[in-house]
Length: 332
Image 1 (cartoon, helix red, strand yellow):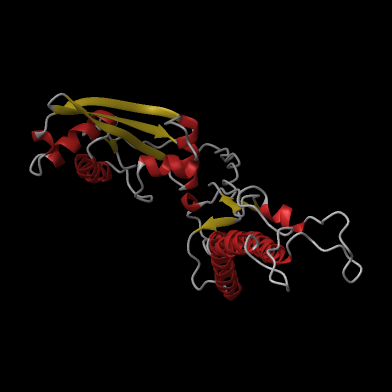
Image 2: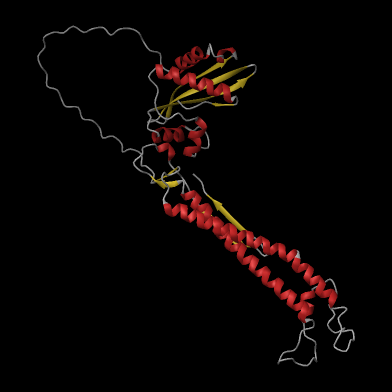
């Protein structure tokens, strides 16, 4: 008996409990107590299709499934139940019944559930079988009955979803290392990005301003190395002056002080991109180790409702703006 799907959670849960009790009295019981919604999610059913739900019934090793829903209808409710033959994959019987709010009250809900189950299951007969008189007859040869081969049981999946106890040490170590290093690298990369837009930006502005007021050894104002505000200041500072005399075999740049500030900023930017990219890869690996803590090989259990259907995807890549794009995905 699967838990009812309902737009009134409290009423659906109360009626489900009463229906399970009434069904058990009619010989239908056992199996895990899961809801219709959980069955659909476990089996990947897009809707209440007979074939998909029958596959779920085979997975939890039952012969019949009772499922349905309880919906509000005016001032009351409407319940509908279906009895699914798991082996045949078809509906054996169904019932639909309007209910009032009073029918679901604590003192009436058991009687209501018994009435609903009676409408769903074939009626039982109380008539006693008529005894057949025993007479002396000649013994007859009995042909042995040939039992047809039973179909093989459903193939169990190799892996299941759930926390493994105790968790393997290598999984815990892998999670700790990747999470620690990945988090540290991501924090470092963010700090570098903050430095670029704070201290390095201020240092560049100061160096550009100083280029307009600096003087040579004779106290004369130097104009050849002036860097105007705005525009591509680093490109201008690193450009060479045509006709300038070489120094140590190289033509000097227009403004050496501004160029040094730009070189430091470029180094911080490249370092932040590499650091963020590395941190993103390690963060994705930490997510993978987290998933691995909940995925393990089946150890002889027949609880097929816990089967895992997964397709794990991980990825991380730096972007030109200085950050990193990382992603992880999996499905059941």
